[in-house]
Amino acid sequence: MNTTDVCLTLMLPKVLEDRVIDLLLEQDMQRAGFTVCELDQLGREVRYDSVLEQVRGRAHRVQLQMIVHHDIAKNLIATLKQALTGSSIIYCITPVLESGSIV
Image (cartoon, rainbow, N blue to C red):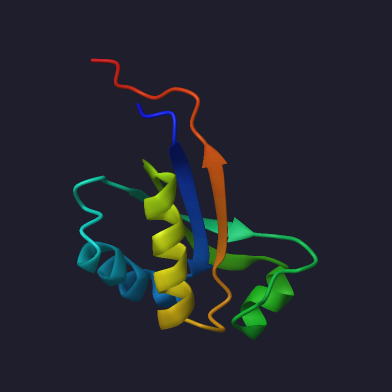
């Protein structure tokens, strides 16, 4: 682990999943690896994509996470902002204190 490694977390509408994954693969992020999972987002600032989500009070989202160098995370965010302006993607960049594998 490099001391400038971070965990980049993206939360996005389910309809953008394939498009964002394609963008990440174009940026050669498959080498770094990332995880993808589906979840429900709740809160006051949540943007609902359907009436069903409004009724449920939950927005169906996809979360992607990857551990990368801080500069790579910032470049990925800039790329997403340029390619997907107005798409209501939420991101978070957090420091990674330690990482590894238990085999």
